[in-house]
Amino acid sequence: MTPRPTAMLIPIAFLGGLYFAVFSNVASFLPALLNGLTVTIQVAIPSAILAYAISVAAGLGRLSRNAAVRLMSGAYVEIFRGVSLLVILFWLFFVLPEFGLTLSPYVAALLGISLNAGAYGAEIIRGAVQAVPRGQYEACVTLNMPGWRKYSRIILPQALIIAVPALTNMTIELLKGTALVSAVTLVDVTAAGVRQNQLTYRTIEIFSVLALIYFCLSQVVRFAGALLETGFNRHLRTGRS
Amino acid sequence: MDWRWDFTFETVIPRILPGLWVTVEVTVLSFFLALFLGLFLMLAKRSKISFLAFLAAEFIEFMRGMPLVVVIFFLFFVLPMAGIYLPPIWTGVLAMGVYNSAPAAEILRGGLQAVPKGQWEAAYVLNYPPHQAFRRIILPQAVGPVIPGLGNLLILAFKETPLLSFVAIPEMLDTAKRIASETYRFTEPLTVVGVLFLILSLVSAVFIKIVERHMIPEMRHGR
Image (cartoon, rainbow over all chains, first blue to last red; front, side, top):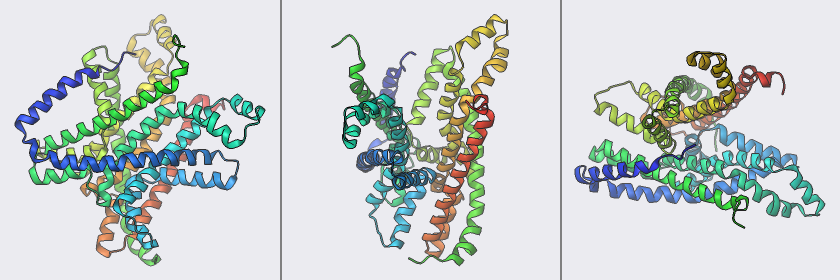
């Protein structure tokens, strides 16, 4: 398969940017969008890290020998995959106070997004751990490795290599999920765009910039994923010792 | 915490059920729109005209990196500017259909590529005209691998419908928000919506498993 000719996008983007800068009074809405972008990033990065931690914990939990752990992580995955993110966010922010637990908007957004993405990630990790060849487990038993070291040194590193492409997709989904945090009153880049649209009526310009921002962010994630993948697969490359 | 069952059964559920109908309607319609658009996208991406293939590939990549909310807002504000006035629900269906056409195209492409090349060659050798080879030989074999992916896409589309509440389409979450703002009680409406979503997506996952078992011949014979 030939590589995607993304290079053609660059001149298009440049010409488009030039057009915007000249004709569309960018200065009236761009600062607000950039403020929103910082919020998006502030939500996205910690919740991605939290989501990875949850994925590994719940993914391994689903494979646990302990039935209670297995049941609990199974229930977690089914619940948070079955309910849509927006409903989860609303529930965390508006219903949890009824149970005596009031979350700040930021914490609610962080928890909602990472719990939702973590449920998808758990399935990815479970699949990846199951894809590690049986012989690796047997070798660990033969070498008399304790259980935790078996996982931390042998199984998980190999599983992570398998999981990286799927985790990249999960991270992009998570990034797209942050567009919903306006539900818990955070003003992220989407919410800022909608607000600016009501103020300046530059609809097409604002939403094109918005789309471009998300496109760039997801390309960054995809690029990072590709880098990780080649880094992890270094030992498979031939021709360089 | 005080949970009021009478409020739940007398106010919340009767009002949310029509919202559930809207949700299902939007899901199904947008899913078929996505399939339709996805088929064309996939054909464009595989076409020999490199410019068309480039456009389709870039569109798919672009859509996969964009949140659905942005698409919804965009269509909501831009369509009237272009002089197209659709009822809100149709705009919602259009937004979700366009948004989901990208993953649908990828799934369909995967299904076609899963058909071994030898099948094309065999059809060629047997002197099938290309369109008939596609319709009689390739397409029936591509259906099986596609079904699990499309099933997942349907469930995903179902779970994306609450985003339409941002533009006040009266689906489940929007109805729940409306009840909450009238009665100042968030607990019951939001929990009912969450539970309904959970039940429906679990049920539809089981349903899709059954369909898979019936539609994919290899699975039916217990491989």
